[in-house]
Length: 312
Image (tube, rainbow, N blue to C red; front, side):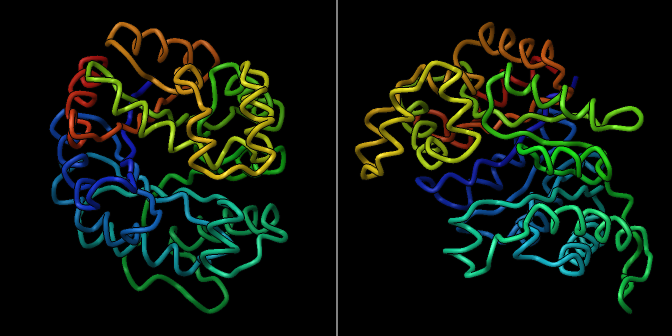
């Protein structure tokens, strides 16, 4: 099992802190840094800035990119650009994102996103290998990237089984992660892809501010299909029922207990963190990807990274 780091891109913190988190992740020897995008930096631009801060062998996992927003040519060109400009190994993650991001922010439709994910996985892999697709071929060197598929629903799991080197899961408790690992094994014709699980993290630091930040991060997931069922199974049915009534986000935030973060995160003392990582491993997860909280008490997630580095 490996422990990797994802940049938090916290909306309540200065955007440039992501670079400090990347630098510290490299200094502590984490094998991979995941670089996505939300409302600040473009992922390819951020990765180009972060790459020189990382040791030469540290992999950058870019995305997941919403396949109904970015087409395969854009994704392949961006990944090849980062690899060529930074000299760092690059992997590519694909997903379907959310209705808010795709339809509200970008004005695109998520209709048919499951099929689009399968099509994009095949096309991006072909383009990164240097193959020509619909008349286009990379003018930069081919990228020996691992392909990662973000999955939750059965069709995405099937796509991961067919095309991915890794499947990544987001904001799940270990038992639900285990259920998806089982689904992936059933859908795979041979050895299944590795499974990575993102987990919000705050280790060995003051937890008050961290819990506040991490609680804000789950507000949009409580009533979302799939996630809501997972939270109900984990014992938070009352919070989910309240979320489904459509309250103001401020009121919903106030209703989220810290125990909900404990259920999906790696939070607390280094000993607690080690036990939680072991729980993910016991449920079939190969790689735990920590998303370190960044607060005034622990800027850049420095303490979390230091303690997690001792678990490598």
